[in-house]
Image (tube, rainbow, N blue to C red; front, side, top):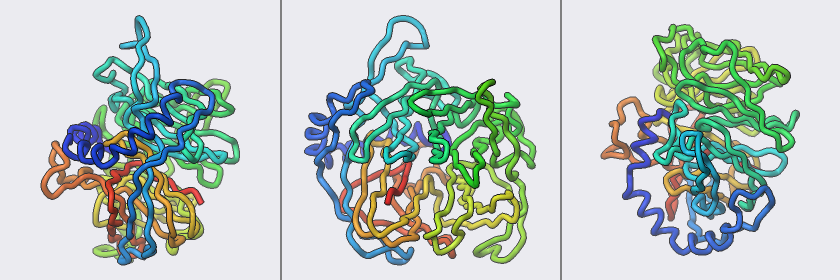
Length: 408
């Protein structure tokens, strides 16, 4: 998500106040349960009992009509980390803020908290330079946490190797961290000047390849039209380097899926490669493909293992993370950086439904101060993978999602 939008989004105090009021009772309970989490690496009880809301997804996007229930499981204000302002001097302690991306590995959840760090690693207002990666149980109890220098924006996980990936600084000055066996390793990219002159974002492991979005092309100069939209990355554990190679380009050729280019060959002109993922076998379309979300362009790009024979789906609204329901029961986890919470959404799901965080403020036409008239706050939606229509999931309570993941 573009940096200016996130900053403006956090300034929208009215929505934050409404959400805070709506969850006031839940906050009191959650605070008492999560208060011992702190910075400890040991597990603590944070299974919160919160106000719940029923949700009825829009049937126009092929979702179930069964009610869904929303429950807050993590309140970031009860979690702390220590930091040195500007990287120097005496340590201070502050609450974690801005939960963003979320992944699962080994039955637990991993969430990146950005803590006010800028999109190129700039210090927060408090002088903090570190994001915090936290491992939680499915109920929201803290298992362990790690601080990493920079702003965590993209994450991924590889069950085959037992690694969690986190990229920092989505606009420029980017690097990659891995967590394996409780150990954090920082990798520098090679070449150090990334060919798209931007940063890096989401991570997916697809047929054994580590694929990373080449975000914010042209931040540090004019990017060539043929700059990579996706990198295939090879790690050198000894040298602690991550070698990048193009997977497909911003101007790659693709076949249109829907109007106005259905069945036509088009040249892409991607400006905002962002989140990504692998489409599960339960999806009614694109099953087994890799998907890149070019957020500001309102396009989803689908690829096979070769990075060729691309297909492009135009969507009716910009979106952030997308998570497919892979079973009738399970949990859809959402991060909410407006209220600094992690929520779980449960109920009866239709396998194959693509749930998404709808992000109107990431439209290319959105004003710099957003939300605004015609550009509401984030909401939970669904994507019709045939037509590109983004449907609404109506909630009887407020959830303002960013990161999403479905756990069966």
